[in-house]
Amino acid sequence: MKGEVVGCNRRIAGWVSAAVLSAALLFCVTATSLLHTVLAGTQDRVPSYVEWTPETKAAASAGDAFRGSLLAKRCEHCHGEEGFSQVASTPNLAGMDKLSLWKQLQDFRSGKRSSPVMKPIAQSLAAEDVADLAAYYSRVPVFSDLQDNRAFPEARPTPGQESMASHLVQFGDGERGIPPCDACHGPIAYRPGAPSLISQNADYVVDQLEAFATGKRANDINEPMRTIAGLLTEEERHALAEYYGAGLGMQETANTNSK
Amino acid sequence: MSWRKLRTFLLTALVLCLIPAMRYYQIDQPLLRRFRNSREIDPLALHLSGEFVENNLGTEQNSDGSVTVRMIAEQYLFIPHCVLVPAGVPVHLRITSADNVHSLTIGGTSYSIEAIPGAITKAQLEFPQAADYRTVCREFCGAGHYAMRSEVKVVPREQFPVLRGDERGSCGLQ
Image (cartoon, rainbow over all chains, first blue to last red; front, side):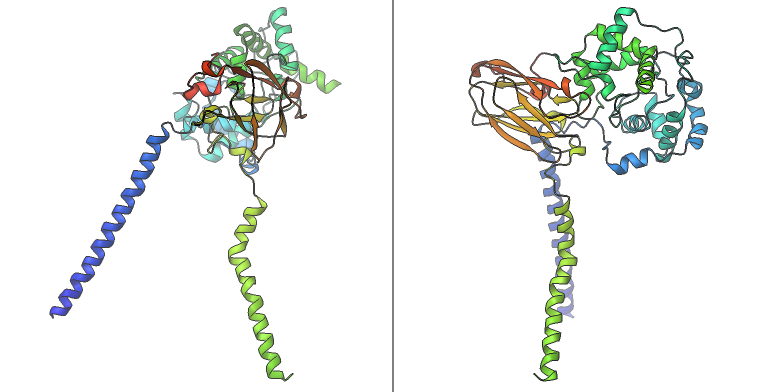
């Protein structure tokens, strides 16, 4: 009888000591990680959680455009019918590159691109909805022909702005280390996640360039746009916005294609 | 040789062959896979973690007086676009690429450092005098290659400021 009690006590003592030990271990692990965070001072600044692996690209471009066209009814109120926005500061989504649209919605969802309007909307979308919307908007034809500019029929940059912007778009500025826009935003080449700018609203483009330059928008992976926007002068930012707003990026596509 | 001996020999040989085979499948398979994908760093995930995250780029001061410079080369920029270093101290450069092979060539010096996706190129540089150096990419990397240029600003050692946080990635011009 006595032996049994002692055995029971021993067993309890064993459990208690095990619990105490594991609690101590857990405490040590937590304390070390906390200490590490404190000692490191700052956390890693991550611009976006998107990583352009082949799997990500496949998932982002595997959307169903028809389903996307139904979902897009929710976007019409601000982004306009078929993605042609009537408000100059809201981006056109028509003809937007799939990967770019997908990435922006992911960044709105994670808060890496801040927008009080877009965050709850992006968070309400399921993963497949995002891909479907991207598939739909990327298929909306932007211009049926060059004369029919559905985005902004009356917009036109001044001749000075046009020559300045067209030089930057096609050649950049080697002296200052500014690469040409069309090497990433098309039509020469596309970088994954870079939006096609052929029919973007001028006001929206200038807003975003300013946000990049001041660091207010910081979701570009490896900082290309923050660097370039910071190197551009204010005059150049406006000229580029007017150039893209008038659909002149598209004209360049047409010239390139006809050659 | 009797049948019995042969059987024992064969069985032993079989068992001896099986042991490494089992070890190979159980243990070495993941190791092999890791070896096949062995890269120092994942070029697509530089921004997520590791030493090339945004706030770790640029010039870092070491306790022995030397500096470490971390850079990313990507189409068609060197990040940071301007690097500030002190004159006359060893500069440990660590550079990698996010996409293609690039080459950081510092004009007016003999330094030309390859930036390779998946690898970290380490180089020790030293700039004897204060000067502004223009850098170019010397490896054709795509449509914007010719505009891929940046700057290295070398200041006298005593003028080199204590860099903190956001200043590391710029020349203090912003």
